[in-house]
Length: 150
Image 1 (tube, rainbow, N blue to C red):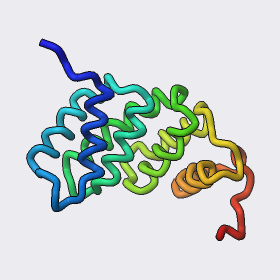
Image 2: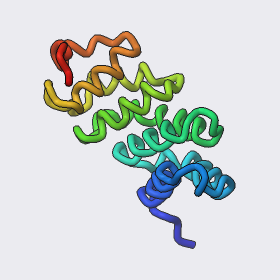
Image 3: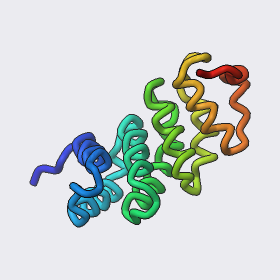
């Protein structure tokens, strides 16, 4: 029996998150989220960041999404060094918005070992905002935030 590639599982989670709630089949969505949660250890760092974004987008009122976010967040800390620069703000945003229990540890690992966005970019601002939300000093990595953002 062939298994679905982990990246395709993450794509299914993303599709669930992008569907408007009124078009989403609740049982199918919950099944996809539960499968993703059980297979989270197989996800790449990129897939973990995307799964966290999708779970955060679905909100805490969706128990399978909250479980996925917690599982993905727990594995993200160990894979922070494998995150691409473009994954960093995606994961940081998800952690700051949904606030899973391990968010501060994951954000700290991101600041310590991940490839970070260049200063004075929207990606850096999102990452710094997320870190500062948990009391982490992002100014050491990104400088002071802009004071006149349009």
